[in-house]
Image (cartoon, rainbow, N blue to C red; front, side, top):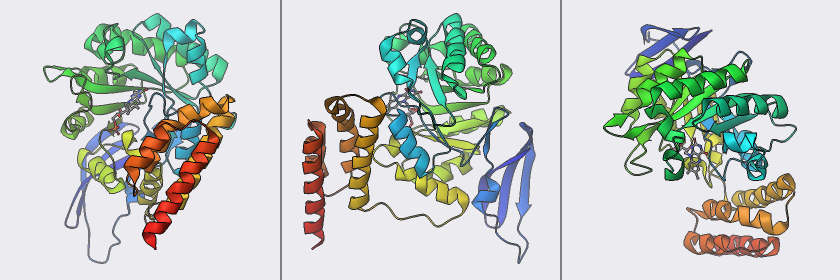
Length: 377
Ligand SMILES: Cc1cc2nc3c(=O)[nH]c(=O)nc-3n(C[C@H](O)[C@H](O)[C@H](O)COP(=O)(O)O)c2cc1C
């Protein structure tokens, strides 16, 4: 399969990095002749290949996010246009030990396809065995390995972002998961490293490539940075230049055009969206339109957002089959994210954060609509 990504446009010249069956060839420069049609984005970017069976279009992935990317949110983002939606991270030990809390997190709807899940842990045996169980018992289609979690509790136990800091063990973990998951595709997700003096992403990329992963996602920050500063897309581009393995760029994409621009500049074949879609899953609709070469749809009106809050709450209620109280507690943070950027956001965020029932949620939504209508009069 031929695979090309536009890395820069200057005047009438397009610079393409071309690869065939994953092997990168020499950069290719195309000079537009007078009268020749301008190349469309959709023709420049190719779908991402995930193993032999899955084709991901657009090459835009919903990042795994703990407490966020459960089935209801994955469904919403997928319907709006995300190419692939990865579940939140789950503990490999929790899977093996039958931990109820862990198994509750690995919920897929019967209709969900592909089933994409992220696992974490630093023990190759447990990681491999949990991958095998997810394949056999949940029929997952894709396994992503979390090598990027910066949370101290995990890092101090040699998990998450600590794993690539020990390349020998990192390789053992990747090998165990790839072998156990076979024939399912396996990907890894990393940060740049522990800090500026201890960068681990180049080693991790090499290991992922040599052990047969389908891609590596790089969040352009170190553990020390947590979420401060800016994601370093130059280093993401550097890894992309060094590997034949597809590199997906991640970090600080909050606008659709910016996502496409970062992808072009770094020359990567795909992007991964985290915080940018919190309260704004419509970001995926805009990105899909850009990749399809269609006009970008307008931002949703407040009525659409209110409709989405209702639907999101309903999906949480139905999917988890819990009490209304449990669903409303899950809904609190989502509600406050949806309110961001709207008139009176601070007050609505406060109300969403303390909402206690479906009835109260309806009251807030009513006030929100009234407030917006009064403002427009
Ligand atoms: C609430 C939240 C939960 C997250 N949980 C995970 C997780 O379970 N696994 C993971 O690999 N990264 C997790 N991340 C990191 C994101 O996947 C992503 O790498 C990071 O937010 C940077 O991308 P962004 O700038 O688009 O947000 C989480 C981030 C947030 C904000």
